[in-house]
Image (cartoon, rainbow, N blue to C red; front, side, top):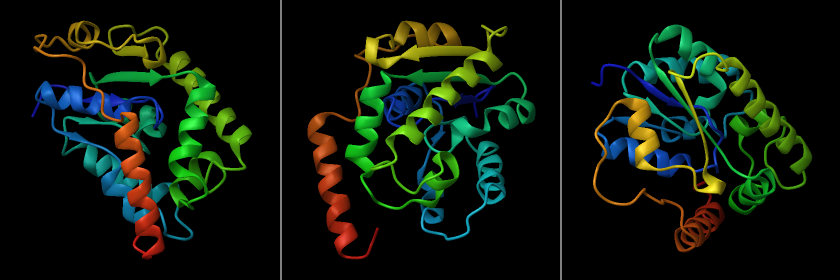
Length: 202
């Protein structure tokens, strides 16, 4: 285990997968959305259920990213002193377009709790409002703690090994910054999800 934990507090579709790959390359044991997938279709899902699982997982891993981790930055900050928090964001219009393209109208109970609706398609304004509010609140919460908080705008190519490693006190590795969700990979993921949905497996 690493001496301190690292939590990504930026919303999904902002480059969190790439950040997770970067942390993994630095030797962090990273968790993400996968342990929560089984809750996405649970009717009546509550925040308490999600938070209980998140806090349990946080104790087992070095780092966490993606949904629903950004929503628990206050609780994680209290439970794990001396942790580091990384906030990633991108242009808001690009973000909502990516969310609509990826999630479309697929229902997700975790999304309902976060955004107030099961899916982004047709609910773009509400999703954008939550996105903007979260970004502002996170920056305000950590405003006086530059040693604990790093904000990166991936839409402006401001994520790189030098910034991340300097923030975490890690040696800079060889190779380029990872880019997880290329256009080809996204098309493959979307096609796979449509097939799984038709088969009743998603």
